[in-house]
Length: 275
Image (tube, rainbow, N blue to C red; front, side, top):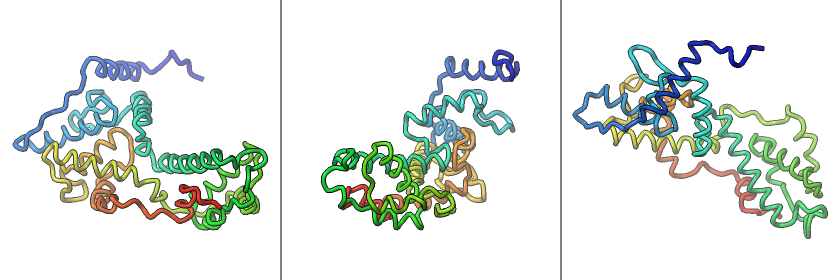
């Protein structure tokens, strides 16, 4: 194992330079005008996006210089992730994190309802025999989110040592077998709704602030607001970091005003309709 103090001199120099820029050169938003050069407005838009998401655009690792396409170093990325957590923007780190946050929130809502109504008491509380997870257990055959929620609730019942509803108890063997978990291509749409809403808003904000069109020609967006957001995400090692992905999000922004269709099993869990 390497000695922690025996670091690569170049890496150490780079980290110190990032710290120096962070402390000595605060970022100032450029007040771009429509008459400014488009390339300059585009670069300023990228730097503004980087700044809004918790990084200093003057850090050496993400500062645009020459033909080099920079991205954030590991040291600065750790700092960035802490700031993203503080702003509840972890969904930009990866779709998997967005899904885990959704799962955690659903389980927390249901578990809180069960605790408040006495269903996690050792005797199950009055009327616990009437508690029914029928739609949740049924949906677990086809919906991976329902499967993961049912499995998490099984563990919650074990932690509190409370009597388990019959339907959940009967499904134990299936829930404990990873091969029974339904397959899902990509990420659950509900998990990406918050992320897509955030990015669509950023495209609109950057287009207005820096006088850029939301969309551009070609596969790279030709210095558009969508291309600026995609490049900002790439420099910060966040996702989705491609122009086509941001373009799809922007084009579907009107549908984001209406939340994704919430499955019946989930709406009943959220409303506490379990009897």
